[in-house]
Image (tube, helix red, strand yellow):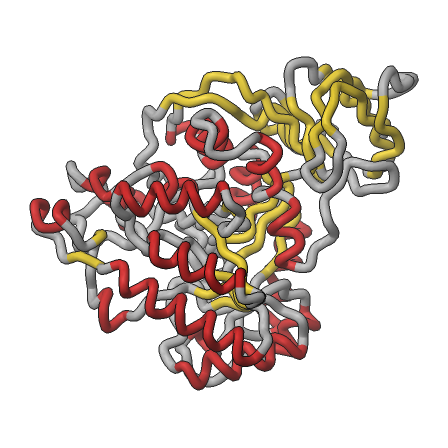
Length: 433
């Protein structure tokens, strides 16, 4: 199949390319980038007024399969990803059974090949059952196709165990994605500890619960010379710890979620359980620090931490609802509205944190728009008005606090391996391409 994406603003954050031109795709590979390319026997996508960029990558997604298919499946999760403009996702290991062995990693890859519409890269568990004790068979996970290690959702409490994880991960060149939480301090907390938790009568989670573990994992990474990636950074102190570590030359990277750079703990008023996330929504000062960390490069990646739950699980008292919100179908709008629209990041820098940076951290082929590159592409309409309606989500999850949110920017088209998966903001019917 020949596909000509015509007259779009081609913006490749990994190169100097930024201008109105055409992109020609043949058999899943980019074969031309330039002006007035021939459209002979090609399907033409008119991208005037749109931005054509490498496919977005979300390195922190919970697809829930195997074992929790009531919340999400690889089929529904990858369709939600495609609608959000993502051509690839990294699937976290807290499935049932946990992805702590070759069989589960291979099962995820097989299911993704059969049912998925975007690329799925499995993440293996650091420890068996993600219980923080015995290490997983890390070499076996790597051989099976795991691109990183994480016990996401659970911290590795023992510093000794974390040291061993980092040592072994270095042998197999796997980044460790760390959920940083001192559970003796978070201690069944429900939201950020501060004025608003006091007013609402909800037990708080102090900043220190995150920052102590961020500091520990940075210290261990520095001692060993290993790579460490701090997931879902939420506090000003964590940003500063990462910033200082980078200045010392520590191989540390960090990510932030759209909900943490958009919302604060004041969103919890009304007790909407979709605002219950871990780490919690923090203060205005923390949000400002996240913006600063994004702007100065301390924070490398924007990732959703997409965490779908059933309606029944979330439709209960705040204290009993599980942590997590969905994010694949709202992330791009929040990035363009809250970061690019407010001048926190240029569009190029924002796209870098959604494409090049996650690929480099995970050791994936760097997404590019050049002749010979795989045609994983996202076409963005940055001026489109969007009103978030959870009933229109392709994800099974509806747990979002952004219902009714109005912003700009949507994924107009998502192309995976040269195949159009989303066009004009809508999923293309299977078999129509």
